[in-house]
Length: 146
Picture 1: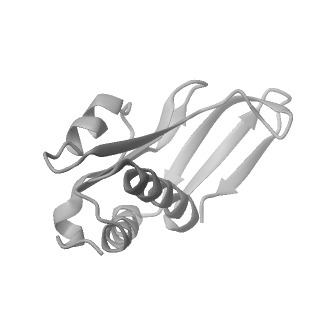
Picture 2: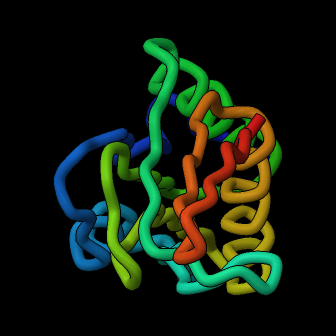
């Protein structure tokens, strides 16, 4: 569906230990042909399955950026995206920290919403990033993103 190659549409991709910036991601997907930009921000919440979360950490497989790029290329192939961006944190995070920020810009809003949703859903399902949650009661659990 996209006339540009998936590579050209990918403007920002990263998996990093440093804090994420919504402004950086939004700026990366700016395009004069985009009438709609959709952005998703995932944050560390204070509970999961009725258990208080005290903190968490993310870890990733060494192939993480290659796998993320493949997901983004597929989104670019399936939607008329002008630009895509995705960044994910690894390491220790606190409640309220940004864990993931993704964005898609397209000619129209419906396409931007759909592309952004597919990007975050496929990232969570296919990219090798794992979450280790620590609970206030002393317990912990690993949650696989794929």
